[in-house]
Length: 338
Image 1 (cartoon, rainbow, N blue to C red):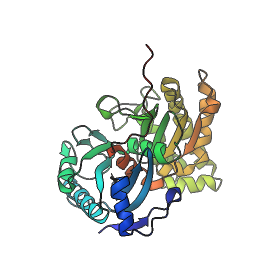
Image 2 (cartoon, helix red, strand yellow; image 1 turned 120 degrees about the vertical axis):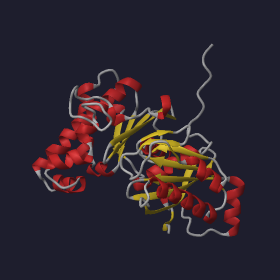
Image 3 (cartoon, rainbow, N blue to C red; image 1 turned 90 degrees about the horizontal axis):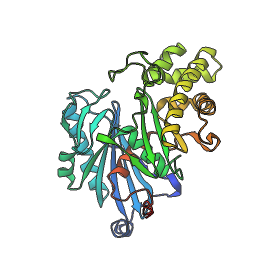
Image 4 (cartoon, rainbow, N blue to C red; image 1 turned 180 degrees about the vertical axis):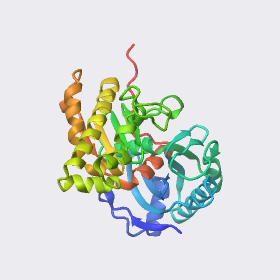
């Protein structure tokens, strides 16, 4: 069963009524794209409308992720949701699937999915969905999808280059460079949480030591706060608990070092934080900005914005839909000078 959240009213468009004429208008003048965002707890979906270069959110929904049979039931559920939504909303032209972990986006295959039960090495995700709904299907890392969504419809709008950071069970990231989602070699560009911050530091699940993720993921912040989870840590810090406040300052400092490295290397002008831990807001944003001021001297950091995302839990699904769309969210590069 799909739990309907209802027609989206984000961005000032109320879609509470869909007449036949309205549906025909979709088919004639606009393109519709479905994004599926798979997590260990919920599967979220979003339909995004593309009209010229301006994307708009049409409808969203969520349901519990079916992990009873591991990867088999998850992929089967993706197919069922794609079929149901495509039947309900006519004219969907493509499907995007966002998932955490290590993926082969070109082949549509998962390699390592840390937080969704199942044996995910070598699982083909996109082909069966494409056959079921008879439209192209594309795979994207969920943090890259977050960055794409926030740049197109959220807190990253108007930025030339943007770093998106997802903070939760792990620390992920995505890069928008000169208006384009930058995937790099094998689609792995933007793994913000797996840059080395402390040589020979704590072991990381990726096999390295001293990764940024080992200092800023949710469980580390919660433990340093003396709280059962990150949500409780945020509440304690806001209530004035000095231990929790220090935990966020420390995590923000490490995040700020990582952000400084990215700013120096690729020159982003905006940084957008998302994920559950980003609910801490200024508890993290303040220390990140302080580290930028302290460490970056090759560019004007006063012009670099560090903000929280605007799209909430829907960012991953929206980004997956945008990734599947053939319309790009950037103006073409100018021709090279002779």
